[in-house]
Amino acid sequence: MSTEHAHRIVLASSSPSRLMVLRSAGVEPEVSPPEVDEDAILDELAARGADAGTVVKALAEAKAAAVAGDLSPAPGAGATVVIACDSMLLMGGELSGKPHTVDETVRRWRAQRGRDAELVTGHSITAVLPDGSVRSATEAVSTVVRFGEPSDADIAAYAESGEPLGCAGAFTLEALGGWFIDGIDGDPSSVLGLSLPLIRRTLAGWGLDVSAFWNRPSGAA
Image (cartoon, rainbow, N blue to C red; front, side):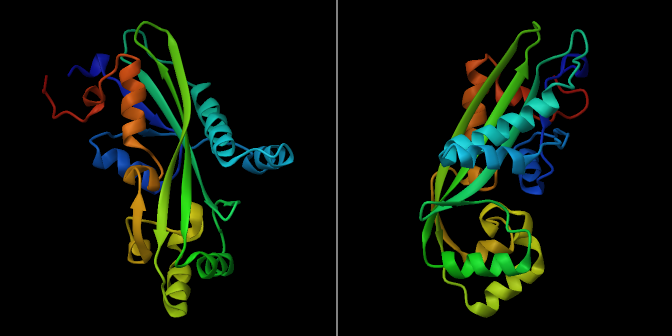
């Protein structure tokens, strides 16, 4: 694949989990964390009584817009695709994002252990195609998470590890948190913060094959 006409993916996120998903799927994205006032967006949406899907899609759209606006594809380049996501946990009608502190992580885990909840992830995908046209799509994916019943000691140790403090729902699936998740119903990659099937379907609708974004050894066709 010629590097001159190579497609590229720009990940509008600082999330290690989302970066890991793409790298594991054969893509080495450019990482461009957006600057977005999430609290202001959340306050506005809360005042309107927006549902979970609307909230995460709005946040994802704001992040994508913050990054896509700075793109300047080189003449003759392949497609440039910006992917932005936002995840929140919906349980008992309450929507929650990152816990940020050890105490809040402990509180949430004591409330959610032994229960089911939905992890709702909004995706906003914008593509500048080789012909110069721009396509965009926004969609939310919901996956059921079945929480296990960790002991108080395990919850405290998990919170104090720092791992879940910056994670929606106060958990990870791929690392220490995997001990405490009994199962999921739905798309596993969306629980990690980025749905590969959704991205594949979206790109296919724009005439783009995901394999065209995979890493190629030097000199490969």
